[in-house]
Image (spheres, rainbow, N blue to C red):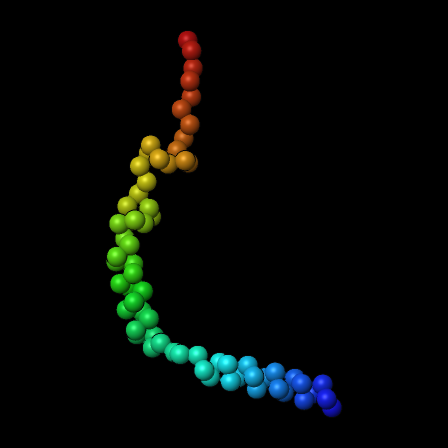
Length: 66
């Protein structure tokens, strides 16, 4: 009986915590995310590419002597 009461109190405490969280509308969050992406697009290597001199995954040059 007492363990059931403890479980119920934890559930109520969790629900009170979740109810106190400030919510943001999805439209506002999407607008902020879009703004962030636009502001940081110049620094995104997937959009701008990586220069061959700083690319650690470039093919290694093979040195051969004839």
